[in-house]
Amino acid sequence: MSNKHILSTLVGSLLIPQVSAAVTNRPNILFVISDDQSYPHASAYESSLVKTPGFDLVAQNGWLFNNAFVTSPGSSPSRASILTGLYPWQIEEAGTHASSFPVDYKCFPDLLEEAGYYIGYTGKGWGPGNWKISGRKRNPAGPEYNKMRIHPPYKGVSNINYSQNFKEFLHGREGKQPFYFWVGTNEPHRPYEKDSWEKADKRLTDAEVPPFLPDNPTIRKDLLDYGTEIEWYDSQLSQIIDILKEEGEFDNTLIIVMADNGMPFPLAKATCFEYGIHVPLAICWADGIKDGGVSDELVSSVDLFPTILDAVGIRYKEKAGNSILPYLKKQKKTTGRNTIFAGRERHSSARYNNLGYPMRVLRTKEFLYIRNFCPERYPAGDPCYINKEGNLTPMYSAYFDIDQGPAWRFIIDEKDTPEIYPYFLKAVAKRSYEELYNISSDPGCLNNLVGDSKYMKELEHLRNKMNDTLKKTEDARYLNSSDQDQNVWETYPRLNGVIRSFPKPLF
Image (cartoon, rainbow, N blue to C red; front, side, top):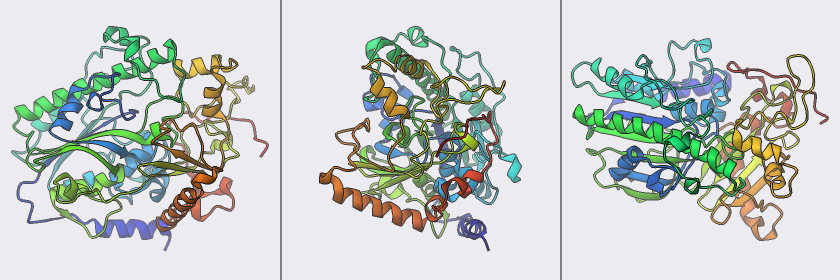
């Protein structure tokens, strides 16, 4: 029997939804996930970039987490990991971007439905990708509720009325049937309306420029446009909370608010650096969590699957992550984590033969350890490509693993200046096989400590810990490392989005 069928049989057999009799008043589940938002971009974190009263209300009524991380810096694998409770390298095609989602892997909405929950989603569920091709009958996030539309205030903002779709969903349930609802906003994903920040009454001084981006008006304006979309999404979250209160369901609803990956800027989204995997997280449940607070404990998005099942009383023998419910209820002093693991494979179509840029990372409270399995490849994608006419484009015209926008355009245009060249180089230059960063002193991940004798012991410890985890979780990238170009990860098809042509590399 193949590893695929062993794993799927194991997962299926261990997650039969048997509801515990101890849970008499099962909570509703509201899962809210934004698209491309980094920590600390919420006003609960005292960010000057945004005002987020909806997110802040959830945090004030429960827990605000300073150290929450997703398992991948791209939408498809990150969302699949949340839905299955498994690491991206454990779920085959679903662990890469814009591929398929094998039907063998059961998702927590399915288990909730089988346990009697009324379920649905609005906005963006799992994606991008093709869930139908593997035999699924619906999006892994649940049945779709996207009929209600609006006239958005800014170009680039979705016309899906998330809050009214939620209200429509609620009106369809029977009596007081417990419900689960996934709200997947398309914001703050690019593109943005240029200078929308002016309509939102923001100032250039509100922008918080991270260390890996140059500080100038172009960058600040792009960051403010990003922040404007966060505020729009948050206004919808506030309306959804109001609906919960009107329906008398707020107190008995477990609300989880987070992002799928980091912001769409160089060295953030699609990278495993700090701003690519570190996301906001707030959780509340008035009836079940009486006393929250602000937490520095490490939390992984893979922990949410067992936490939700724990809260509703679905028994299971094994879990890929840790349920943090005992911590949320202050029955335990820690979340049980001292390390976070994440990784990526192919993101966009950005290299010859549609190759990816495989990374695995380990994050502690102090350090970020990165392993780049194919350091001979360009991390942000090849620098040029072959256009539809069959012509090679100019140098520096590609880098398709970076979302195109004013900030990146500025760095490309100004790359030859002494002030900007280091930022350009950090974003696109080939990287070493291993990287190590002291996050407490270098959150921008600018100073690689590999080779520094002072950190040799720490490097060896983290290297061994990663090896042990990748072996235990049967990561094919790690276990079959002899020919990375022929690794099974390179065989998974890209099923959504353009596939580009690139010149054959020299390596």
